[in-house]
Image (cartoon, rainbow, N blue to C red):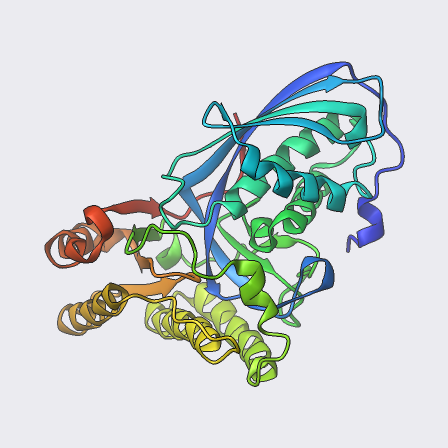
Length: 358
């Protein structure tokens, strides 16, 4: 099992220049992570579907420089300078310098873009930090060619976590576990691990994201996670996540879609319940979020089609369903749910395979 010390690079050569490009997808948690310890360590384990279409594409140009006393980078978002993103990248470099001591030896040009609208309410920090971490690991591979593929991907997930916790689940696919769990071999608080025992029922699972509210988050993820430190129900929630991950492991292996729906919807509502019972408290769902949830329940009850919802820390609704019922579910979305979306917008996605080199 790789430890934190294993990720500290001590031996490497130098290169004059290089270019890399990676895309990394967003992900949607089935069992939620909410609450963290120091150094981006999760308070409870989580498991997620890796998405396919909602992704960040990042190109990294690397040039050797003479002075090595500071980080040096330019940042472009969709081809234009993006100064307000730079502090987050600076902080990320500071966090990972211990593990990548070569960073100050180079000037970086980071050119990044999303395949989904930046203001759509879809978390771009996971895909963005995962794509950047993959590029940095490509640089490490160039200056230290002996590293193995397992080390490459594990360290990429480890680095991504230090930028945005859930980003560690965007490196590999289709299903990823992050956080120590007694029943999942190789699971770690330090990086995400691929969960491979997936029943055919969950292959090519679909995720249609209904954009209920495209505004900026009412509460940042960092603030939200911090509210768990003194939360009256925190310890029971962390235990529940372990219990639900045990159940989800059995569900994904057996193909039981009915039990899948129960856990996924319960986890989504529990996440929002924790925010509503924190101090200060937040209600991140909107009236249209609740309308959509009730419509989904009614549709599922009347048709017996195994469609369910999950939520991130916001108002948007992720509708999850098997590929073989896509036609009926998409018709239902167009007939009954589009009116509850901001500007009638939604995004069709499905399970993907993680980061890819372009």
